[in-house]
Length: 207
Ligand code: S3P
Image (cartoon, rainbow, N blue to C red; front, side, top):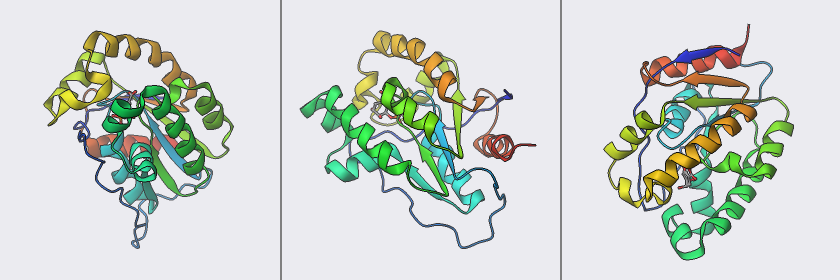
């Protein structure tokens, strides 16, 4: 599996529903045409840049960008933080699984998962069994991810970051899950978001 090094700004954090997901497909000629793949799924821990990179990739492909957290918030009409606070994480995971199943049915999309989505066996099986799907793991050391997250406004309100030691335990446990479900891994330490996008497109386009 090819591994490359890159760096990108951390995604936006908010306790409010995420900004509405861009849903327009570009009318311009795509810069890259993928023949064997119908969707690109971005996975990785919080701060890995999934939501920042996704729209860029979608633009290059002339595809639609979808954000799993935004879809959950849209369907439930509550922010992720509110769902965690009012209904608990297990309920959030059920909403997440339902939203993932729905979005994986779409073609010509770049889909950013939430950092915890691969924890659920059902989600992993669904990802593995959805044909013509590239799953890209945006990897980075825990310290770098936390630094990016802490730089974001309202970082303290992100539910999984409330307890840093617990977040690190999650990170360690999830690493092997991210690796298991991904078709490509990119180390996100030293490149710009544009470089990241270029590398991801190269990887998913194949030889
Ligand atoms: C979570 C990550 C978040 C969001 C929720 C839970 C996690 O998504 O789904 O707060 O368990 O790591 P991002 O990875 O997009 O921040």
